[in-house]
Length: 194
Ligand SMILES: [Zn+2]
Image (cartoon, rainbow, N blue to C red; front, top):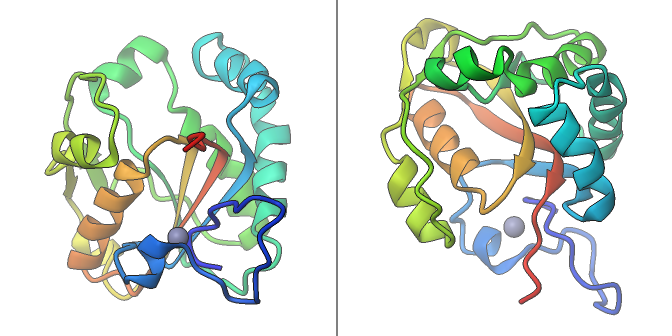
């Protein structure tokens, strides 16, 4: 119900079932949803979109994400693409999360905010576990305009969720700046076999 973690099909789930992390109240986000899991099929969309300049895929991808949110009764005030460090933006030429946010912004009738939070450049160290990634990403986001965050319900948009450390850290920073609710939506989510 909370982070949207997909349980195996043979689990008998009651309405409102939560994963152990959310049940322990350790999730910084109110809801997370993904359009699909990260597999061969979604990778064949993701990689050309993210690294091959196929930005037209954004329209299909964002509609799949809107569909993934369909059961949630949310009314975000702001749609916020997860920021990219300037150095990465310069190399890639676009923030793929902002492209995904455009259609979501239109459907929810909420503006995109892409400049209230800045992201410092930090090299990808190839960390694997959630704890390692969380430690590496800690402090990387800075709220530069808290007036636009305070009292707002914010829907974070990203292309892929790996360990969830990015959302966790964004959620922490936004709540500390006074956001009343933080949701997250991604195109695809990595699910580890274990
Ligand atoms: Zn959960």
